[in-house]
Image (cartoon, rainbow, N blue to C red; front, side, top):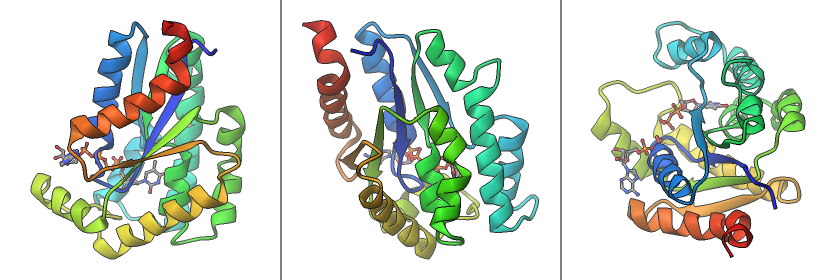
Length: 212
Ligand code: ADP
Ligand code: TYD
C-alpha cells in the first residue's frame, strides 16, 4: 500500500476540475493525509507565457504551444522549490488540475498525436498518475459555464474545438487503456454527488486497507 499518491484531474474547460480538486483535498485531509494541490499551465515563467498566449496577449503557433506545455510540465515535475516529485518525496499526496492527458487531447487536433505522446514521454517516464480522473461534460454545457464566469474567450474555448477535444479524450482513454488508469466521472451531476463518486473510487483504491 502506497502511503501517498498522485492524482490528475482531466476534462474540457469548465468541466468542474478545480471544484473537485478542492472537494477531494478536503476529504483526504480529513482522512489524515498531507495534500498538495497544483495545476497546469503552472505559475512558472513558462506557464505565464502560455497564459499570455491563451489570453491573446502574445501570438504563437500551435506547435510552439505544444512544446511550451512539454517544458512547463517538466518544470512542474522537477523544479527544486515545489516540484511534484519533491512534494511526493516529502510525503504529500499530490493532486494536479491537468497533466499530460490534457496535452494529448488539446494539442492532437492540431498535430500528430504520436508526436505529442513522444514529446511528453520524459514526463510520463518520470511520473504516471496513480489515477487520472476525467470529468465528462457536454461541450455545450462547458460553453454555457464559461460564458457565465468570463468576459473574454481563451484560445481553445470554442464549441467546435471543445467537441474535438472531448472526442480526443475518449480516443486517448481507449488507446492508452493498458497504460493509464482513468476513472470517468459524470460532470452533469451536482458537485457533491460527483465528489462522492470520486471519493468511493479513491477510498477503494488507496485508503481502504490503511483505515481498516
Ligand atoms: P474547471 O476547473 O474544469 O474549469 P470549475 O471547477 O472552475 O471548472 O467550474 C467551472 C464553473 O462551473 C464554475 O462556475 C463552477 O462553479 C461551475 N461548476 C463546477 N462544477 C459544477 C457542477 N457539477 N454542476 C454545475 N456547475 C458546476
Ligand atoms: P485551465 O487553466 O485548466 O483552464 P480551465 O480551468 O478552463 O479548464 O487550462 C487553460 C487551457 O490550457 C485550457 O484551455 C486547456 C489548455 N491546455 C492545453 O491545451 N494543453 C495542456 O497540456 C494543458 C495542461 C492545458
